[in-house]
Length: 428
Image (cartoon, rainbow, N blue to C red):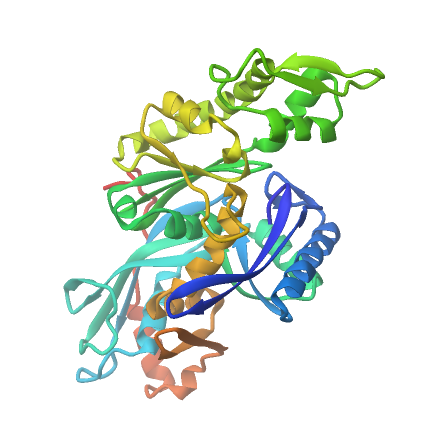
């Protein structure tokens, strides 16, 4: 759900290949700078986008995966610890869920809500670097990772709008996290890369390193501000300004032509005014340069621009010609553009939506179990074949487990160290 458009993507996974079978794309209502400001209007727009996707995919949509914006986001380290009840017992799904739950024991401010937990490694009896501890035998199970939290009001409004549209949320996924998974290759995720999503209402920059989302920042300006600049400078309507930006706009005034005429419908005049393409590019470039300047300041503060992966840009504004050259000059690093290669979606504005379905489809069983601790009900995952995953959410009753209530209480006392002090260096 973006400031300028709401997109619904229906995909199916066949033999490991994700195929898009339906897309809905409507103009946003009730959103400003990436967040919902009118729940009823947003619900209407969501319903319209879903109707489009249903018609194209020939299916009924009831359950959805929803992207969460990066506004007011915090990424903090977390540790979890449990003791296995029987020394000879293998570690199970329940233990992975329990150790993830213990990592969530923290005193969050009342206005914040946990969005996600990202396991980095599990430790069994002191042996580190384990990605999936299930099936191993141990007495002590630890988990180290990151916990991601956001503003409770933003999360509530998203859930309320989707619910009013008649839909059930299966999972809420942080959009920059999904995009880093879809857009960055293995080397870029490992050595460190910056992803900049140039949206309509805001710009989001995220940093991924060691296959973990380390840092996210947002700038409260995006493509709509470029449109407003064009409207004000050229004294034309917002609709005409948007058309000028899309049809003639460029982010690099040095490459724009002074010989190419651009007709402008000026408010209060019966005849069009003619400007050159270079003048329009100067208006566009000025705003993008300001956005990049503020983002660069945030990235310089954590030394992110020294990462070897450089910068990848995407989002609707990234479709402007010359954007890569301007970014490379401003950030003084290598820059590339990402455009989805799915048929009918070969535009950077579809990156976020496509990333959400791809991320969820590729989510490991361990990740699902850890994420279910956030919801408070364990996700039981059974893969019947390499291409099919069945997921069900079930409330976990502590009375169903072997240990009695007293043993559980003793175990809880031994759990976790809670959230450690917020790390200063994101790349240690």
